[in-house]
Image (cartoon, rainbow, N blue to C red; front, top):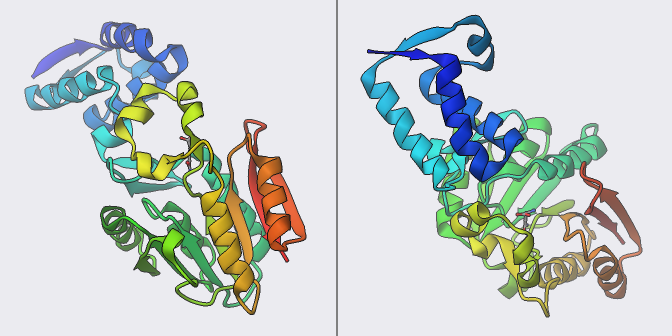
Length: 283
Ligand code: GLN
């Protein structure tokens, strides 16, 4: 056992983290790691001045802390990300679920919570965060999901099982598809949409640890996923509605492209940061 004076311990760790992450993120990373590994909450820091930790636990903490200093995402260090109040297993094969994507899901839940048996298809599922949360919150819906990556699908399947939801998964490259894998009422997608020219805005821990396959598109063809998905949807007899997460800089271009395909009702929604981020698309 080792005795630790919490105030000193925190200050020492924060000094190191702040140099890399800035004050706010350092503070939240510190508390997340300490609570997860050492079982000490933020409130404990006010209530106790000192505490004792088993040598093993402290060693585990120090190893994980070193990874944080190397800018490994905390979700990869701990193996999970919190999204919509649930823990999702994540690793470098899937995108860490982003808080704005919760708002995309909220939009769909608000629109369909009174609906009967609708069918929903998520395209580009990654960790499975979108279809799994939809399935949880719309228990009458049948939820389908596809991804090109076998590795991502095995994580999504694991998450569906852990979170006790039924989602039907398909492995498919949507860009090569001639039709949707199943007839649905609603399509949702958060496809890759970051242009290479936007890389400069991104943090190193994203660039070094998250799958580029899930993030990036070519500068000269940034809407390819939206176009393909919209074309496939438009060909369907029942004309499913589509909910997209979009590139904040390309809302106008995305809308024009969708109108050209033939969609006429297009709703744009901002995310909590005030960026153009979501689109609801209907014929
Ligand atoms: N919003 C994500 C990011 O900024 C990108 C998500 C995506 O490409 N679909 O990292």
